Image 1: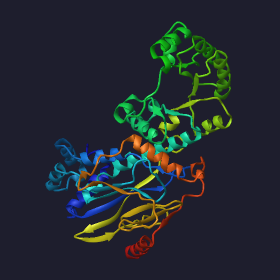
Image 2: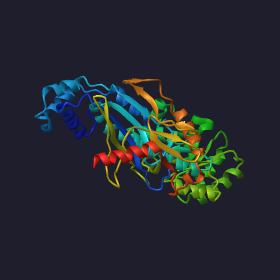
Image 3: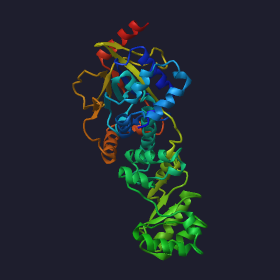
Length: 438
C-alpha cells in the first residue's frame, strides 16, 4: 500500500518522532465518531477490510522515499529517517468493532496500538476509509427502513465522487441493507448481487419502442425490466404489457412517479400481467420513498443513486483519530485533548452493549450483564489473526443490530440519543488525567 497516501503532517510528525528519539514509544490511537451526522441516531460501522488491507500493506518504495527527501520540510532530517521509511511495516495491533455494528457518538470504532510512527502515518487513510463507508451504510439503512420490505438497489456509481468511491459505496450500501447494486466491479470484488437491464439509449437506438422492448425481452427473459419513460410513460407501459411474458416488470424513472405507478399498475393488470413488477428510480431519497409507501403507491422496488452514493443530506461525518495513551519504556502516560467542544477521553477503551444502553469502559474492564464487548482483536503483532467476515455476514450483523434498537432510533429525524454511560473506572481515569494535564 502506498505510504504516501496520507497527509504531509503525518510524515513530518513521523520525522519529528524519529529525530526526538521517540520511535520506540508505543502509541494507542482511537478512531471515534465525535458526533453523529445530522438527523442520524446511529452509525453503522463499515470499512474494516480496507483498513486491514492498508495496514498490512503499508510500505514506502525507494522512489517514494526519495520524493519525501526532496521536500523542503525534510531538509534538516537525518538520512537514518529515510532508511527507516524504506523498511517501515506495520507491526502493531488493531482492535475494531465488527462491520455492520451500530455505534454511537463518543464510541471508538477502531483502536490501533503500535510504535508511534507506525500508528501516526495511517491516520488519514483510516479516517477516510471508515467515515465514507460508514456514512453510506448508514444512509442505506435509513432508505431500506423506509422502503417497508421492498428491495432497494444501489444505482449510484455514476454520481459518486470517484469511480472507486462508487465501488466501495456499493459495498457499504449492501451491508446497510440494499438488495444489490448496479456496479459490476462491486459484484466481482465483494460478491454483492448485481442488477440492471437497460437505459434510455437502448430504447433510442431502435426505430421503435416496441422493437427495443422485444429485443431486450428476447435477451433477458424473466430478468427483463423495461424502461418505459423514454417517450410517453403510459404508452411505453402499454407496449411492454402487450408483449406479455417473460417479463420481470417495468421501471419508472421520471415524472409524477406516484400517479404514473398507479396508472401503470392498472395497465399491467388489465393486460393480464399481474405478476409484472414496478420499479421506481430517479432522484429518490428516504423521505420520498417513505411517502410512496405510506401512500400505498404500487411500487415493488426502488433504485436509488445520487442521494445514496453521496449520502446527500449528510455527506460528512465528524470522525476523529486521537492519541489516548503512550507507553514510554514500560510506563503508561494517558493523553487527552482538553476542551468542551473537541475534548477527548484518555486511555484505551472497550464498548459493552447491554439491552438498553452501552457502557464505555477501560479496555481491561469486564462488564457483568453485557451482551457483547464490541471492540475485538483483528491484527496482533502485525498479523491478521483470522480472515474477516464477508459482506453477507456484515449485512446480517447490521440487520440484527438494528432490529435490537428502539424503533424511534431509526427515525429520519434526531431523537433522544441511545444512552452511552461511562464506567466508574473510566470516569476516575478521566478526572485524574485532566488534573495531571492542566
